[in-house]
Image 1 (cartoon, rainbow, N blue to C red):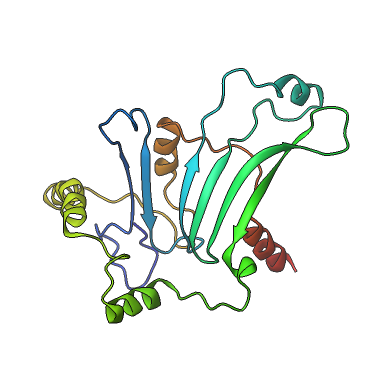
Image 2 (cartoon, rainbow, N blue to C red):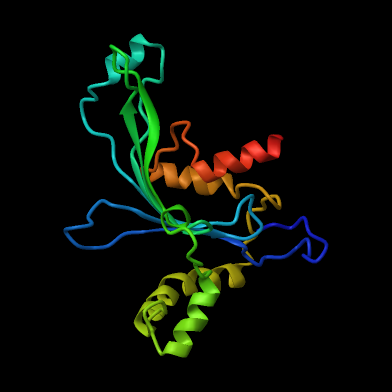
Length: 211
């Protein structure tokens, strides 16, 4: 949790950041970790689903990358569904730079940004959409009772254990990326933090901050 706030007691054990790694016990999803992460007061406010594809054995571009002095390992391709802000679906992938004799690779994206594709259409934010669903009698964006029960079945024992044993929270700074241990655990379960790709909205934001 973050403690560097006047309204937060220094001995607070209230969790404000959590990560859980779960799996689905069936043949289709065997060996695929689902890493769920959420936190407050982080460096950016966003909600997204990120699917990272595994490395393939025998990288055909390895020799060319080494010859050109680039990283020996390419970044992994990822399919990202950005829920908020700036709704988008994009596929981050490695592609050969055009017009070159060798196989010089760079990271780029196939992009469906809703605000650009559907210009002039107002996209409601999360709460606006839910309130509209209530008026329309639609349950499509609401959690079912069995989903809620399953979530509590997984999380509640952990919260009870924290309360009973007075387990201290791992502190992180307000406005930071969160807890380093969480990233270490994600890496342990196969998520690879590799590459230099920055989503275009983030590139624009960083450029504006520099100016």
